Length: 458
Image 1 (tube, rainbow, N blue to C red):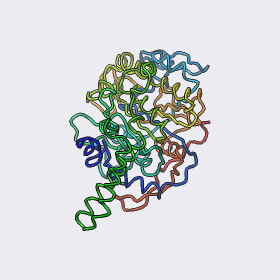
Image 2 (image 1 turned 60 degrees about the horizontal axis):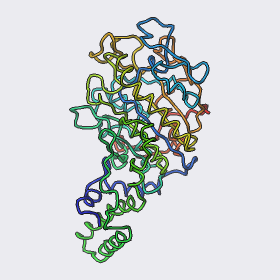
Image 3 (image 1 turned 90 degrees about the vertical axis):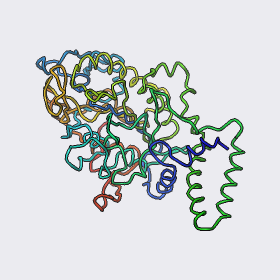
Image 4 (image 1 turned 180 degrees about the vertical axis):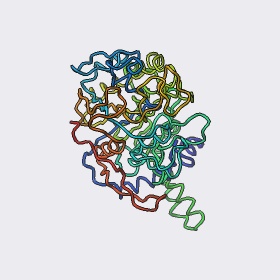
């Protein structure tokens, strides 16, 4: 069999983020609960730009506004006549014919954790914005909804998160909005952890001296032991272990290790995505989509993820140097590479790609809205208007959906809420947004989404 330590790591403890018994129980529930899929085989990759990118400096620029609003960057033409974006995103500009800029995203929460919760769940935050940490009362995340009601192939769960759960340094729990919350933690998605883009996959491959046939014989022996021992205490122990080992067997039998092994990609492909954590995560996301996983959530990770002042896309200070020297170069390599790779492999039509943060940034430089860390060269949190990048999944590229006021501060036309975005993703995955579940907190039935799918993106 597997080495004892590796087997125990799979069967007796947990996969990162979700225990084996929970995953097995989830597979049984999914078969009974999932509504009939409208769009069989559809997938979604949800790239979360943690920290909140500055929409007004990147993809909703206002070159005619005063200097304290328009900032330092200049807009440049893209492949689509009439659409301009930031000069520091040249590759993205040449991919604009495959991308929709939804410029009218809006909500009212300017604190990181509750804002993350609203975007991930599609629901207004349930309490006062005094914590960034996940609580049992949280609304279930989109990834948890898909974990419960989605369908997957090849022994993989319906919803996978990589390469990390968002968590502020020094906090004991992950940031709000990333769990099953009031739906139940048994629906937490599977987490594939990575260290600087290197995914840890120990225990999911066959040992050299234990081929598949030998593993099957040992599994049969385990099943026979479960049948032979009917005494209550041992039977419960064997039953629990049997449930755990069943899922571990499914992962092994379906060669999940091969799916998750980025070393199988050519050096050219890996270089195309780049060596950054988010680049390798998007490459992994493409492999998971190919394997039939409905929803893959990629949480942005860069060298500032442990910086509590300007975490990832958070730019309270030195907004322009950070965008120019760190964030734009990474995004401009990985996002177009991912879109083009999906297209080249015939996956873009069925794969909806969504890139969004928890909010945008203030229209005026140095404007204070939430954080005293904001300096004259930075921008504070701004949820009233920001941009979502959409591609694939039937969305027509080369278009702008919605608009903002001349300062980029508020939505002018076609407002879209997090609930609408969540409903759109669920609908694309064949999950009815009106599906109801039992709310363990309020003790009543709740709809998965209170929003309305956006119908006119095609």
